[in-house]
Image (cartoon, rainbow, N blue to C red; front, side, top):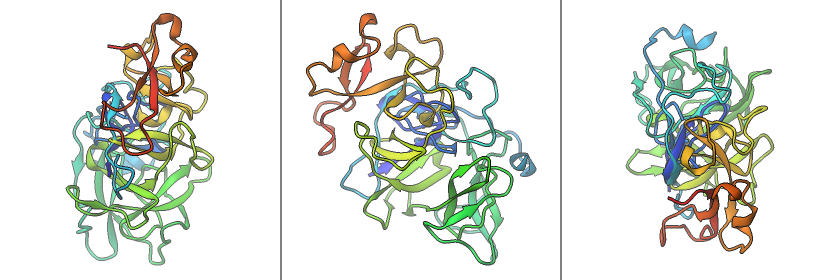
Length: 332
């Protein structure tokens, strides 16, 4: 399946993945250390979407789901917040964090082909944040390390996790970067094309986020089990679920405002504001739930305000094994 996520965005029940630094607007949205957007949008993520301006062209600004397929497409239960970049309602997200944006975000600047890797010898095409923010919103040719690290190897970035400069090989990038050490792990880009993306590892799915700036093969996961590695969470990206860095920090609990897919705590997604009682932003974190559990609706934290456990997928659209996945929301 193919997953489009915006690390730093949120989405709506359209189920698009997105994510920013701190939250996701879509119940199915997603985000990682640097920001990702399921659909390619850079402001919010599973259909979290967001918009990020890519006006700054100076590279120095960045330095300061079909579960059975290799790629996944996740539907997004939330709506895309287009302006909220930080869960704390500040104007600028932490530039050291990678956010996944919603597929409904703004435009991006593409200076090279991430799929074709058409940069000159000694360089590679890489996603980066050209506006000094914390979400990838552009692509450019960056220096290739003379002795590059391979997929799964420890890696390091120059500047921040969204600088677009690291020591990983061509068609790979340093992912899930620790902002204190600048260390992460090399992750593979999706192969093939956007129309027919491929991941060689059957345990991963192709996640296409932040308006196509992020094309990564990320681990499959179960949102009810939250079976991702430490420091990551299972977020909805396009039509499926994938592991991405949990960038929620001290935020991310139920009711917290979110604008990116990966800014809610593990077990929660960034949903549209109408899903949560008294949501004061473009999106708020709300928990996943098991629709087959008779007590799930009563257990929703916003039950007193009308929340129920509703199915994440439309009837007949859930991938095998995910028919019971739901999230707490006020029914439309």
